[in-house]
Amino acid sequence: MAGIGYCGIDFGVDCCAVAMCNDAFPVKHEGDSSDAPPPIMTRPVPDAIVNVMGERSTPTVVQVPKNSTEEYVIGVTARDQRRRCEDRTVSALKLALGNAITEPKMQEAIASKVWAMPLVNQGEEAGFTIQGATIGATELATKVMQQLSTDAASGSGKDVKGCVLAVHPNASDKENKALVQAARNAGFEEVITLPSNVAVALAHGFDKVADVLGADDDEDDDAAANGGETKGEEKNSQDEQGEEEEEEEEEEEEEAAIIDSPVKRILVLDVGARSATASLLLCTNGLLQTVKTVTQEGIGGWYIDDSLVQFCTKQFQRTSQIDISANTTALSKLLSECQKAKHALSTAKDTMLGVEALADGVDFQMRLNTARYEAECGDAMLATLGPITALLDALKLTREDVDKAVLAGGSALIPKLRDGFYTHLNKTPEAVGTINAVDPSEAVVLGCAIHAAQLFLKSGNLTVPTQVTERNGGDPMAAPATPSGISVEVEGGLAVELVPANAVLPLNMSFYATADEDGSFALTLLGGSKPKASDNVRMLELCQKASSDVASKDVKVSVSIDDKGSVTASATFVEYNEEGEELNVGAPLEGACMLVSNGNAALNEVDVSDCCA
Image 1 (cartoon, rainbow, N blue to C red):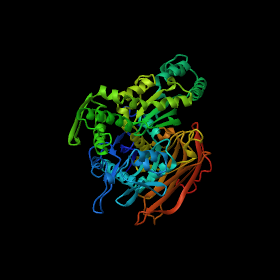
Image 2: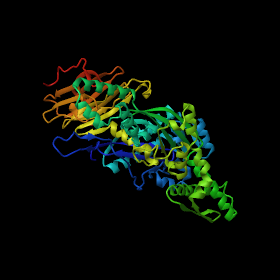
Image 3: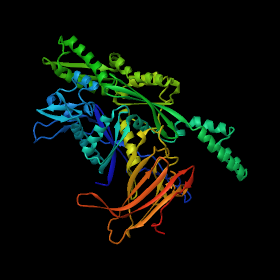
Image 4: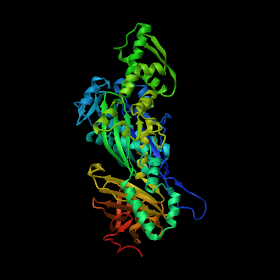
């Protein structure tokens, strides 16, 4: 394996996917001259990992082996063999994760015959009775997670240690814990959850500097604030003025920027298999905050499929005089064909449906065009827009108050649904368009991959951070936040961001660095997120040299920030025993300071007594 990797995972009801970013943030060099500006660190580029079947998503279907000599079958093969092995093939695992069979959603799923086998409670979670044994939903989800981990490792050539896992914004703690436990059981050492609506916003680039989202408006505001002057004219004017006037103008501009900080309202509609969720997020200077989410059950991809199945059932009865409305085997065959047709009609104008020996040895064949498909299933498609109205009404907002709007989910590829989305908001796609062109079916997993790269960034000998914990419920509206970013200096005089501005406090992180050949180690924490280290403020420096009896060159650095902005950092040489357990070697070196605010260093109680000169 070529190094350590971290991935994003979207574990859906119907399908799941894994994605990863490039090794490090790509560096863009501007100019070739010696006095060219420093490199600019840009965002990572995510891509979905292709599985062994050559597909970018994997059906969330598990086939339990008949005996100990066989193996679990995951994904496409399990889905295609479902009709032959119905009594030991489980789909829609996510519905059962963390839920007892007495839960209303479980009762509805059981009544709808989502699963062919009996269910019983296994502790606080539903279990599936297969071949006389009970297998918990978390255990089966672990098998799927293991397959995703294998796909990520083979696709990237890396040892995948951790993941960012998408969770539904309205999911219960029990559901989230079960999902995280499945990932940990699958071998992911570090698992961080990310709300799916935030992941979608990340995938579309809405976490970038806010003026990118409304560049035209912001340029107009700047021009108005500067008396109609352009930036170039303003600069020439400043050159003609004295230093005092320049300082006064800069102060006024900074104050105006704070007062007029652009806030963009972003609407995300995520169309799932059995529900659709509308969310409103605020983007303020690149900080994403969820305001409210509204989820409506009983709509989504499954119900679009069901509408098409009902239409095909009537067509088959009309041509063959055979009623299959109560024939579960025939309906299962027809459902698989209708799902294929739905995907095909997302890009094609027509498609052919065909099922050999659908019932009583009679074949079913029908050509379906887009117009007829939309006529028969249009109500189910447009029903997915219902949560948008409920969300805006709850917030007392109008369609005109939405600045940006994006879709997510496989069903969002349906042209009628997509067109209805923009019509419902009374906007054109260009008016509410996004920074990045993203496939709606991959938006969640790509956003998770971006977040994984941001949290587990590799640069030189530094891997930062391997663990980030946010408390205070993760609510940025209620919790204190960092006034500026925190970076670490790396080779070449560059800075790599550890903590972004406005990160929720308190938080803890740890990362690893490699000491020099002689055992010496130095690390400098910087206040700010500018790409050039010298443009940031020096906050804290830790220097240490390993004693002669320490052979390890690995150094573990831990950083903690409390809710008052107090920063503590420690560096310790570590070794590993035969079991791979981490052992501290020697006494840790510690330091403390306060967060940098408004570009000013606020050093406090810095312990550098053991630092090298």
